[in-house]
Structure formats: structure tokens, C-alpha cells
Image (cartoon, rainbow, N blue to C red):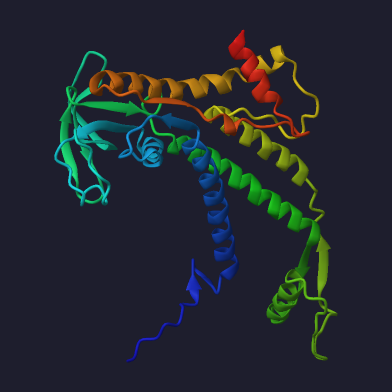
Length: 318
């Protein structure tokens, strides 16, 4: 018997359950949307300065975001094939790659054995004498799990808003005879698709149809406010200043300092671990690399001025 590409009619135990899959697909798209936004912000928070040309700082932040740690070292025998045709320096090539940590620990629980690796099968066995571990934060954990936590919350609220808004357009339940079910579903599809006219043949029987108003309350505005609050919480977790969009008055310096305390503490956790790694790398390899917070991420107020950035600069000067 010849095989066909016909899709099965039974999905999740329900025949032709396309609405289920449409909803599930919309959920997945919404979750991925928020996760990608938060991930991009997390990976663009810091600017590395004086890094060797062979270091891909984007990949370094990517590795710290997903894995919580990377390893910096110098390879004197690296070939152009391994480096994707990047030139090797006269005194070796500096790399910052993914790392597998293991072996014995020192008194501060830092692994002495490290294995750097890459997807092109490159790997190098290292130790505390020839490499430096770069940690993502004080807990030495990746940022991905926390951003997934907030992305899940945000997409659930966002989809609830969609359902509530649609409920204002269709706040009804249709009761009909079983023989009319398919007809009513087709009529609903035309209505849901914003068709200007809905056509029915002369045999369409509307006498046995009842419509019940479900009275769906409008709460999308409250859900939107909740979503804004969750977004602000995610920004605080990352260490990015953010003011709720409904706030219209500017904060005075002292109020702003108090409100941004958690934000600055979260940022410090990630920034200080990177700066500590810079100091250790500079001492071991005689380099002069540094890292700083990306000030471009500081948010502006509703009227478009950069009050939060100005206030933050004021904190630094005190």
C-alpha cells in the first residue's frame, strides 16, 4: 500500500482538534517571545574592554547566560582551522570557552581541574595555574533558569489578556441541536475571521438555537498592569533600572535610590564576578581587560528624559 502524507484526524483524543493546537502554538510563541527578549537584555548588559581579538565577547556572555561559567586561557598550539581562520598571535591565542568543571576543590570551593571545549570538537585540559574561571554571578549559576521563570509568568498573563479581550467580542455560548453543531462552528469561524457577511443557505434552521450571554468581565487592563509589574521585577532581577509605565511623576533622588536598591544589588552580583575575573586574568596573563555596565540599557521616563540614569550618576557621586 502506498504511503500518504495525510495528517491524522485524531489528535489528543479529539477528532480534528485544531483549536487546541492553535492555542498551544500561540502559547509557545508567546513564551519564546518573552524568553528571547529577556535573554537578549541579559546578554547585552556588560561591555568588555581591551579584550584580545580572538575573544568573542558575545559568545562569552552567551555561555555565562546558559551555563553560569566560562574559562579564559591561552593556547599556544591553536590552528587556524580551530579558530575559524582567525589569526593566531605570536605569543599564543587567548580563548574564553565553555568549560566542564571537576576534580578537587580549593579552600574556596573553586575547581582546580577544568576542561575547555567547543562544538567543533576542540578541547583543552586546564588547571588553576593556566586558566581563570569567569562566573556569571555570586551564586555561580546561569541566568537562563530565572529568565525562563519570568518568561512563563509573562506569557501566561499575556495569553489571559488575549482570552479576556476576545471574550468581550464573543461573550456568548451557543446552544443548538447536535445536527446543527457543524453549521454553527462554520458560522462562528466566519465571524471570528472578521468576514463582513455571513452566508447561510435557505435550509439553515435558527429556530432551535439559543444564545446565552456569559457576561465575561473586562479585566485586561488589570492583567496588563500585573504584566508590567512582573516585567519590572524581571528587570530588577537582571539589574536594569525600570520604572512602571503608569508612574507619571519623577522620583526625587532619595526615593529613586531606595526604589533601585534591589536592582543595583542584582547588577552588582553579576558585574563584580566579571570584574574579579578581569583582575585575575590580568595578573596571570599580563593583560589589561576590563568590563563595565552598559549604560545604554538605562530606561527613560515617560516624557523621554533620562532621569534614572542621571539619578544613578548622582548616587555614584555621593
